[in-house]
Length: 325
Image (cartoon, rainbow, N blue to C red; front, side):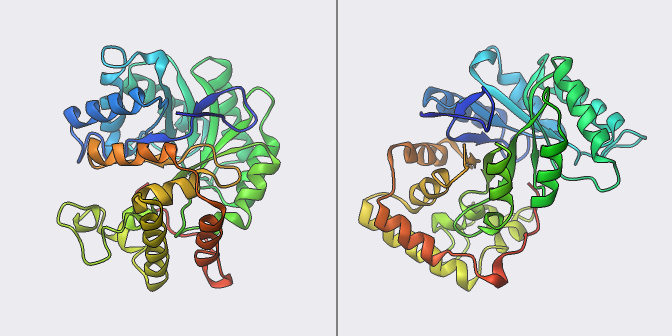
């Protein structure tokens, strides 16, 4: 798998990341192990989790697989803090106390002495940004985090954090929902990220599963759309506009002799500023389908057609709800 520089840093990562939001919940240990091996065998290196995923079980499961199954040094471990909420004065948010407590918790659950990419899951308006950034600085200086990033920041928030972060711990990565169905970040976030040398890691690059085409005629019983936990998350993109885009993706896939999943993933992977889409999978077979996108570069004519059908109109240019990510 091709490697890319993560923003304006010396860290190189695979141009696809493995997402683990369902690990420790819907995805059990055996399936997680199978996915991790398949991903690393394909040349993947960046594995993304968060302290809030499955209430910490995702980090625990990933940690249990590193070392014996896959060498720790073969994987770039990315996790997140801020969103997790527990009892006590340091149970969440982006204060120094909460962040450093969260850092220790993630290290413990992951069974490692450092996190390769530590990310702030959300902006915390109740905490001075300089306090938050000082905690990131400490994490890097102490060696407990090698690089730092953010997730789901608005454009002005991203620019503020980037401009005020120090040379020891610059913001090098930003995670955002980004796909053919969700292009709102192109207005402010993408320009801010490019200006400050921040690499984009799109989450939900397949439009929360809608761009695979699986929902064109209904809701498969084994899909997230049929899950009581994720039904609303998927429903967000089941609109008339989305249906037109999905049809265009399906037409392109048919012409290229591949799947809609591969077309949608290749489109977002090669957008300006993007380093690596974060792809989660129900099972290893589905992950293998995503990995096959490595061999596709969309022809210019098809890319232009998809750009046009999915173009952000004035009414669609806001920021969507994050959902459970």
